[in-house]
Image (cartoon, rainbow, N blue to C red; front, side, top):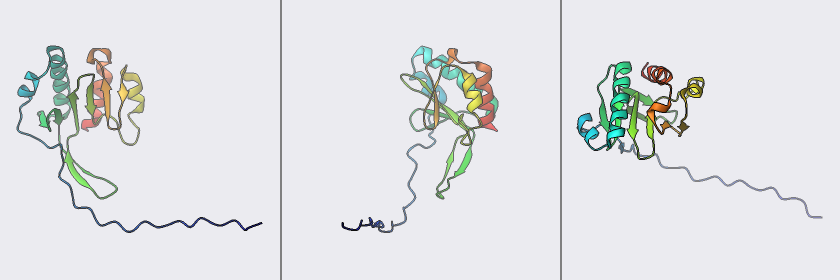
Length: 150
């Protein structure tokens, strides 16, 4: 019998260092009021409620990031890869099927217990998705926003 041959692992050629890319989603000069005017009436009310809650906990005025994200507060992030960027502490976007809330999921998983108490929601990679704001517990939502703002 022939001896088994070992697979030789090929090394990939070394990558060239990446140039720092410009963020696609950046703060704009668009006002929150102007963004509200583009929303249907029911979503407009939800956006106003979320904005008031996030502004209360962050102490920051709403800033429109990109075309439709409403961000509150500032944070400078540094990833393990060394990538750095300025972002918002928490925010939201009104989408067709759901409200996307950003910054509420702690990277260390410490927000998991509160998320279980929130009410019906889905979780994306970096956001919490709510079909209707009225379906979730407002106290728990406030706690999640307060944690994100801290």
